[in-house]
Amino acid sequence: MITDLAKNEGLNGIIVNTIKLHSGAPGAAATDNEIAGASSAITLAAAAGGVREMENALDIDVPPTTVSHYSLWGGGNLKSTGSFSTPETYAAPGTAKITTATLTAT
Image 1 (cartoon, rainbow, N blue to C red):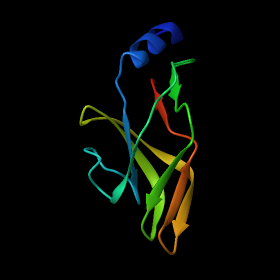
Image 2 (image 1 turned 180 degrees about the vertical axis):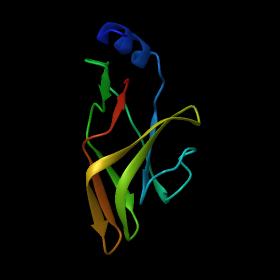
Image 3 (image 1 turned 90 degrees about the vertical axis):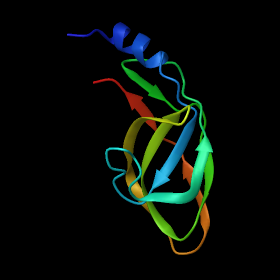
Image 4 (image 1 turned 45 degrees about the vertical axis):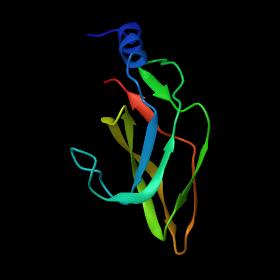
């Protein structure tokens, strides 16, 4: 068993600086369903309990679409993917308010 301390140390060493939004499952390389132009810089807090959470909410402009998933990147390299608990649909261009994105060690 890996302890939470070890998970936290490992997670804190992972560089994440960009979030990209997706309209469906991102796929293994996180290139599927990517919403063009829907990305932003992101800062994750220090890990606790084997999880790193985003430090601040983000506003990201989106075209008409449904935002259901995200991918986290660092230095142009995929680090993780995830899904939002409640997808948001935009009938017209709008602003997605992102309040939850996590990097988790399991």
